[in-house]
Length: 418
Image (cartoon, rainbow, N blue to C red; front, side, top):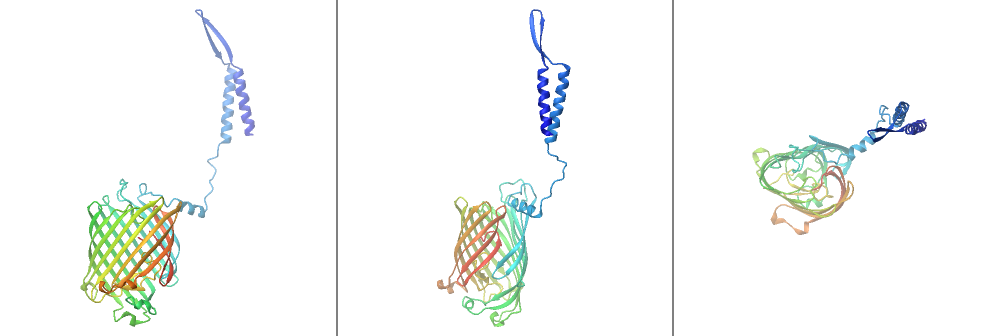
């Protein structure tokens, strides 16, 4: 039918051309030649135009036809395909949700839900990195559960910023006691319930130099302690409220996943005995990070960390703990714990294809009661490899397998380890 209409239109156009007549008009010795189209040809032209229009209409897509709805699976794929685009210039709050299983030595098999958001206080500011926030909840087969929110809020072109981490957790954990020697003995068990608020305000004194104040609140309680003697006579419940001052130098391009820059932080926190602890405690924390692009898609990341708690008897809930998902990955968090800890690690992060990447690292750490008791022979090795998937713009989901002196374990987390 469509072909017949097009053929008819072609024939009518041919007839239209043939129907035109050449005529001459002589006036004042001038000859004017012109083409005259009879009325019949005009009608024929109109019919031809109508036929062409009908043909075009017949070939056009019917936009009134109902569209096929995408399946849930297809919409889910499209959702994650667009999730890693930076939309903070168009949206007030760019939020992405992800749900999935995870595993670690502490939590065992667990199900987690994470919401990662990027936003700008001033959406006309295209130079300052966006602020970020992560909300998370996790529940496991071992009875572990944890909910919390963490983020970095940047204001006034990064002149003011607020960093925060608020969480509540109930954790069936293995417990060895305090000190390097106790970590070599048989483990005990208990259920630890912990409330934590760690907030810090920073003001930019000069370019990339910040000074600020901090609040650190922790309430921890030990339940169902299998071997009470491992507590070394300490109470099973402690509340500590600390106030701190900090100095920082920060030239990182994007805090959750830096490609270049330097981050140096020195923080001193004061925990008065009147606000929960048995005695006054001072905590000194230092963090040093360096990031550098080596070649296309590859970032070298260096990390040095120190925590030192000074006091006659630091509660089990406040001592430094080695291991976990950020430093000394592969070690059980808290197997090695003491008043002080020093850790260093070097990591290579390589983007492989599209949103996929890998990371490899080596590191070492040590726990000790004071600097006079530091022993090089007690330094613990660490190394591992990990997979990265960028589920949001420069925000990675990572799966790391780390190994140490006592074997290895898998860590599932969001954002880079440092």
